[in-house]
Image (cartoon, rainbow, N blue to C red; front, top):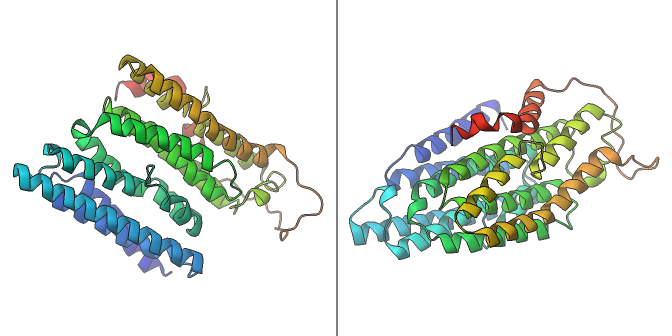
Length: 346
């Protein structure tokens, strides 16, 4: 892909995201989502591999369906109330359809089946965009419409997402699929709290995006997409592998890392809302995903490769770690001590 084409598609992604997150009218929000979808498709399919083409097709069909449902819910609400304002969504059927549309856009269970397949067919940099930037516009719409949505439905969807994200990630050997199920599991944490404390959902999303960006960029630097090749990275880049270990533990939500902060705040808020059983269930289900994070961390740092490996040998070249990864790793692991400062923004 030429640099000019990359520039056009990246600019379109930024434009589409900006239009959606800054709009008050349903039509402009929908237009921004469409620009986003069309801009990411060439980035998914740029390798021309059959798996990449399949991923782009699945992504297009799912996102087109979700956009149609979103537009349908906005039109239904406008038909009954005369309002096109995003925050004035009051009709119950329109709210239900919108919940389905945003769940499909985000990859929230039970509309999650497309996400691991699409991520597996994409390059690591595009997979990073799909996991973070592409989820920002629908997350903003979820934030803006949260007072109108059904909290019971969102709680059930959230618990289902956390359960399926943890359960289906257990048996995976492809790192991109593991990170896709990790994303589904994290979306459960965001969805369960959005009706009660929407700002916590955004805080969780920002920290999740930060930590996931660190993991994807590290994997892209060491050119790893399978567990079997991850096992051989320690001998080549021990410092980067150690960084990856700490970031994965942060993504799992273990104290004293940054990833513990949103989980701690969400459990606290759910308890305040007399939802201690839901908080207990979602905490226990997150132990499933903890298993595959530990498995990744184990493969990255603790296992040493056998002398006879089945994959092609890579040249041992000690390149300096990119400064972006160093900064991202620091913020991904060490923000917990300044949590009082972060809480002033929530």
